[in-house]
Image 1 (tube, rainbow, N blue to C red):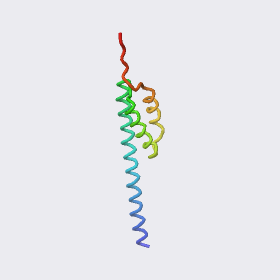
Image 2: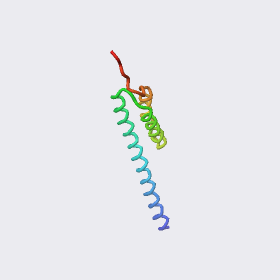
Image 3: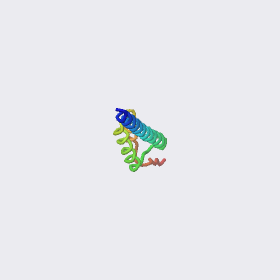
Length: 89
């Protein structure tokens, strides 16, 4: 019985560590999406390569259980032009 208790304790510790890793990676993905959002909104455009990368980050964020709060940021990024707009006066 003691061995089962020790095994359960080790398993519980591993589960908690795994959950901490998932939460940490999710937080890093969220932070990166927010930083990119601020950067590209300031620039007024988001290059295709950046948008594709952000889409991958967002998909993994969601796969790790991220909620929909990043969906609005991603939607705004998708609406940005993909090239800098040059206005000739």
